Structure formats: structure tokens, C-alpha cells
Image 1 (cartoon, rainbow, N blue to C red):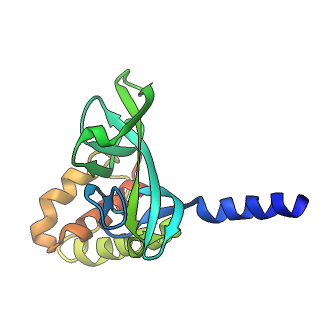
Image 2: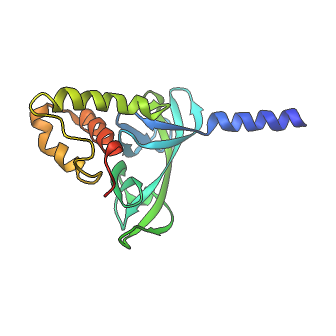
Length: 185
């Protein structure tokens, strides 16, 4: 009996690992099914089940009021996922941020191509750091990571997309890296 319990515990641990999105990834309702949304670089998901080239995942995050984009942290505009219809989110309660704004705790389950997933954040942040040093330092001195707060970096990067020659994936990767280093306030 003890061996069975240990085996079941280890099996559950193998299928309930955290993973991070390394490249933008469509989240589908099932393997070969319809797209329900897009996971962004850096989003943390829980891998529930391995299905060949796909992984069944669950995402948990926050939506400010109503909307179809969820964020990683309460009160922080760190985009993780955008769904085609906000009904795809399961609502799991409400939480207030430091400014008394209500954020809805949400989750969504689906399948994603395993090639888009990374086992740790270093694999996600390293390319962002390299982009920052190569592209941002080509025209001007590098900004300090803490020069802008976590909610300002996306706007700063948006103004530089053309000058730095960033594509969508590079923009997400760079943004997520800088947000990981920036102060919240």
C-alpha cells in the first residue's frame, strides 16, 4: 500500500509542474481544437497532463474589472494571456489591490504546444537580457532596470519597437525581462 501511495504522489508531481511560456503560444480547447486565446512570453502555467506534442495546462491570474486579458500579479500590468472571449475565464473570486481596485481572480485550462514551454524562468529571461543589451544599447546608454516601474516599461518599449527592429516575440521577451527587474512602484 505504501508503494502505491508513493507512486501516485510521484506521478501527480510529474504531471503538475510549473512551466513558463518561452514564445507566444495559442491555447486551444483541446488537441486539434479551436483557439481560445494566446499565452504571452513569461506566463506561468501548471502542466496538468502530457499529450504527445501538447501539454494540458492551467493558467491562473488577474483581470482588472471586465476584460479578455489577464495579468500575472495583482495590480501589475504584466500581460500573460488574452482570450477570444472573457467567458473562457473561470472566475475564482475578487481581490482588491493597494488602490482599492477590484481584480477578478481567473483561471483557464487548455492545451498548448510543448515546444513553447520552458521549465524555468531563466530560459525565458536570458533572451530578453540579450535583446536589451544588443538592441537598446546600440543607440543610447542602457537604462537602469529600475529607471521605470513595472507598469511603465511596456510603454517605453512600444516607442522603441521600430528603432530597435523588434518583432512581436522579441517585444514580448524584452518587455517581460524588464518587468521582472523593475520596481512595482
